[in-house]
Length: 178
Image (tube, rainbow, N blue to C red):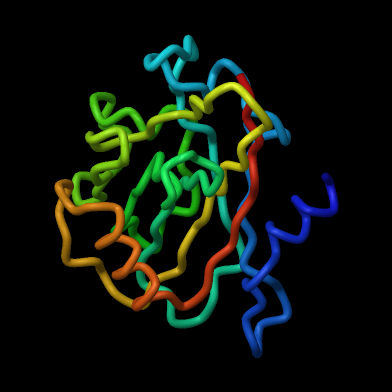
């Protein structure tokens, strides 16, 4: 499993002409989701606190960042978006633990946390059904432009804009099981 995590953490993030790779790290994620990260609702009893995330080795051409959390294993046919944050200024290279709680206002006012598949903005932690563990992919995007969407944007629209404005991206995986 460590090889898979390492591979996903650095897949697709090498920047030509830059000797360092764009890298996403976390002091809170150690492979398995904890009760701190798990959702509180829908049969789960976690604390629903977004993890600390930081990134380094910023690619040339980056003007903004975005962060997402996606569960490809969700039994929906299209996965499940747990967190979408965009228009993070170039000067910010860390999201502190709990930044995904929109009521705490831990991010600058122009940073947008849009609607997740839970139907509301902000972080919504893992809450997988019984069965095998799910992979929760955290990705930081280095973007060449600000995203012209608001907090009501659907995950699909945010994804479209992120991919069309991406300079590079880096990811890490957290596993969760009830």
